[in-house]
Length: 568
Image 1 (cartoon, rainbow, N blue to C red):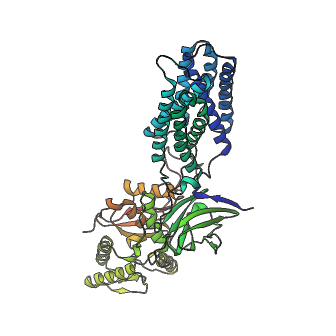
Image 2 (cartoon, rainbow, N blue to C red):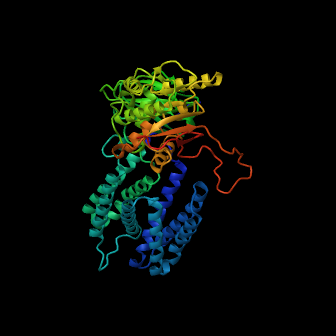
Image 3 (cartoon, helix red, strand yellow):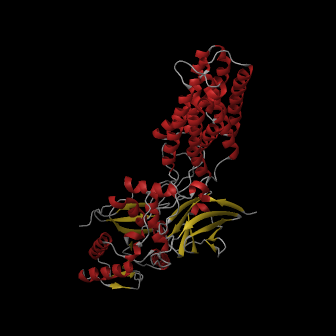
């Protein structure tokens, strides 16, 4: 059976039963708190009023207990809620004591409504919930004229407070006036908290004291919508043409790059599994497969201009992700360089930026990388191998890097040749795909006979798990230490946001953005090392990390350390 999961609605993860219980609990409790809060203003209660308040108290307590079996609720908060819900009707004979119990219950409703929102959101919750509760209290007791309270002006004031709170909540919602406002459950709730208070305020302006009963339904519906906002996930931002799309499918993230008409790649992390495919709804569905030098799986998809639905198939389940390719052509990206380009864009998305993809790392050799390669060749010249075996590709960066290596080697009197030898050093300046092929070929040659005994060296942009782990050990000239806090912070961030994806240099640079600065060059060695291998059940020292796959690693199941001082 095929299941359709519309990922971008912002409501796919809502538990309907839990949401209904939450709304019924909060609404009944708000009515109860409002009734108890205004009890001192009323004389003798009618039998119907007493019955209503006792019924609300019992219903609120019962729903709180039932909610314990449906959702995870703090037991202490549950006990306090039940005690207060029962206390309010019991204290009807003692109005002043009942008011304090109602006030405490109202505070609890505010806390349950906010669900850990920010300070501004908590203040808005307090205003809206308190205003609605007072309205409910007048609905239960009727407008009670006193020397200090005039029901008509108060109804207009309460309506105005609800309008202001609704307008502020709309401003904080992040949906603006785009289509998410009328195509998602979250958007409908935001509309309700804006429109319904306006309608209620209109009743208050015309009907004055009689507005409480006529406007009760509007306030109640607005209160339900307000309470639902705390439980409904906000919809993701709308896709922007040219900005690679990072979306969430049920259970795994999805990266679409460059999100322009024509050829695009859909990237899925290793944690998403293997039985995956993707394609535009109604078009060709392409199986997601591994790419040389890249993690996870990748599917080639042709996007039409404008908005369309991208289907992600995992087994029998289907997830739909909305994409918007726009009409402008995207950058020219070769198939071999598409994974590295997408990985670089991912770094910016993880950092919260939405930059249009106009170029890829393979389009140019940066000054910091060219300087690192010059220092690498000069370092190798000092070790005096018989020659450098150079692995390159035809990308603009690869061509420029190969020319730079040859020119620097010529100045240092070091030969450069394409074939391997026993006393050569391998230098790889290609992209990911050719770099992975070069490393796997070198590993095979070294298993057969002595080859590249002066080492295997990679250009900085080839610091990527599948590439460095293709051999037992490889070295790279880097301008940063992958073990430092900033680099580890990026590695953790990208792993958390994209299903355990390993960090890459291109992603790290876009993640840093304007804060990026070039440090000094050191040669680092990446190796598959597992010192003192032990099973988790074996006795070991306290605090010893037994899991090699911990967060923040730049080399999965390995390590990377400096093997030279700063190269001058």
